[in-house]
Image 1 (tube, rainbow, N blue to C red):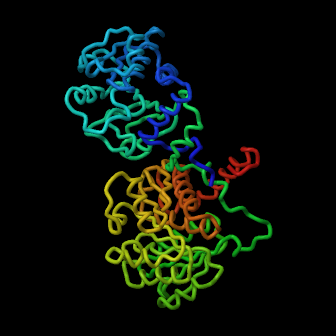
Image 2 (cartoon, rainbow, N blue to C red):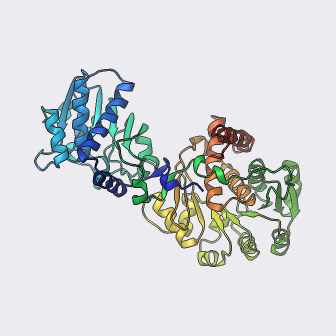
Image 3 (cartoon, one colour):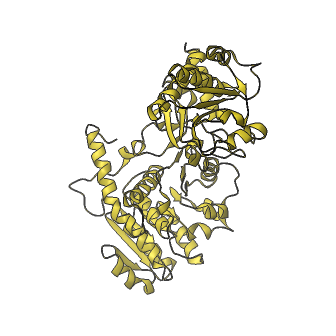
Length: 498
């Protein structure tokens, strides 16, 4: 995997951003210059989208407010009508903020809802990344009064936690958010992501080498980070070279395994085997004509399927039911050292015996829970990235904590946040297709973390490509286009894999 710590997809938290500022300043760039560059970047984005109009800039007492003073001055110099309101007192300003406040030259008006009179555009430079408590009082009244006006947020809408995406009581909805150097996790995690509007990352002069010092281990999921690990087709390959995946199915809900098999085959697996009870065999053969259907009566006959040395990955869970046989199939795959993907019922079945699951893991494995399934195995508080990381560390699994802001976390602390999934994926069976895609990529030789990240992104991209009216059966049919587009993108990058 590409070193994402130095990539433009790396995400940094508020402490890391503060360190980046300090390191940049120690290298010879003044804090005042960084503030001036930040304000200039915001003004450039504003004037690229809107013409001069009555504008109010709302400033807080910290560095975010310092950016606001720069924005107000530069807009006024461009002929805009600007009012500026300061929350709190100018006493105690840091020197950089004080310098830009003096350049603005006033007036600083009383912070109140009256500041918004006649304003059609408002710049929110009140709290930024520094807020750690609920917004209340006058600040709350003014922020609520922004509704109906164009809002531009500096770094993040006030009230959004840049580390977690949580809302500290209230936050306005921005039309545009301009952040600096790198995105922050709260820009991508819900509910904060929904309040940021268009998100722009501006270069304010912080050297890229700063990333080596702050060493981020969270990134926005992107093909640039894992495409070089994707399977490469070889003219001499036969079907088993392209990956042999086994999917456990049931008689009660055979459709789940059929959907997973379709996802696995379209994602490139050369051989997919559906291991199902006799009652499900006929429908599986009809629905998945290119898959092999093996009838399994019990755990012993299932073991006979997965012990084949050519098997590259096993998926257990979709439609299987919360049964003893489901648990035994998981343990059988572990017994034979097959990379394992656990979804749905294969997670829930260990609700009261999770130690057995964790202690039995003898090979790499991936779990793909939604929030409800996650809570059946894990009891962690905090934001989504922290919870997924803690679960990965405790279980030893790659955790794919699903949702509109799916988090993929590894036991070593790496985590990706995925942002390309449209709401149309909230349809029955879509998770089964995702599990099949991930299983396919692992069977083809990808490392589990990279395979999980790639599978989640491809799944979301397929849904975006299809558009409205999506049902789970549509997803596998769009995967070839997603794969072809990835290849074209790689070819355009000079023949190198991205």
